[in-house]
Image 1 (cartoon, one colour):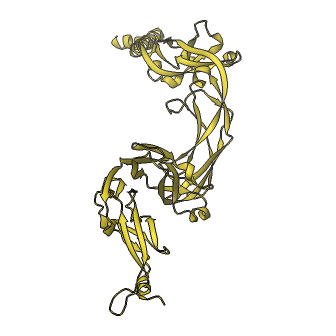
Image 2: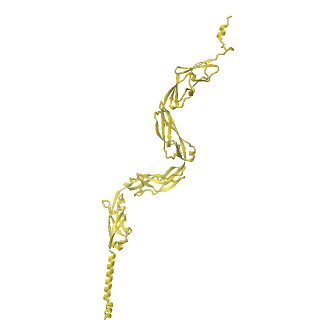
Length: 434
């Protein structure tokens, strides 16, 4: 009996179908519970700008202020949502649909349409903000800039760039900030002429590069030619010219630097051993003076200054002169050039003296002996002569003779054997007339 019932159950096709349907239903319920709906935030999806020509065709340029990337929140089955990344989505901003407020709606879609059909996409902020400006151009010279130090013993002679003018184009606010265009060349260790192809760079007023700004240049590359010359270090020789105001003397002239480095062709360098500055005027000075002289004004043609110092600082030091009088008498004065056949007698007028005027250090120690006072009687004949006094004048000192010196010259008289001078008149008077 039992055997018949069991056989009936297992052979009944309806029950088998019911069992299968129950199993499938149970599997679907389990799978649905396991693949539940979930959400996920994906950050920094790059927004592609399309149809930008619609703005450019109006003579305008644009700059993205906000919205270069977008964040999205996606919702869908866990099995679909979990593996998705920013690379699975495409974000676009159609600039042809620019609003009056200069904004564009960002549209985000899944790159795989099948995935897109299973998820819901919501942008956190789907607005791109633009600034719209006039597109302008301007021309600027290209400034060649050597970077680094050339080899020791050499200096940069010239730096030339071709082309020397460039046209830059872009948003007005950006172009107006460009103050200089540079073409830099690597000069480190260079000891011979060098040529390089370089990319020009726009620079703002703060010396900062604007390479990351939307600027178009009329040329992509510029040719920079760097020439170098040998150098030579020479002393500076400086002398003052002229006379200070009366009563003053130049005590010293200090200057710095006292040597400089020049550069140029080797043959020209061999011909120069010092830099002479001979036009420093001290005319009319009555106080210390400071001045700066441009060294380039004294460099010979064909050579150039290769020194960090471009000026020589000069300090002229003056001192007020003082006066001193020295009384002199005839015995203090030597008579030079005397004739052995003459007798000489030198006399001086009352109050005969020398007035010295100069720096205190020069005249304070002067004595009569050091002046080496003398008169010159060479070629003078008997009689009275007002003599010119000669002396050894101290450095930077003027001497004024107060009074006069008179030299009386007479012929020497012959002497007799007894030592008496013969007298013509006595002999004549001792003779009796015939």
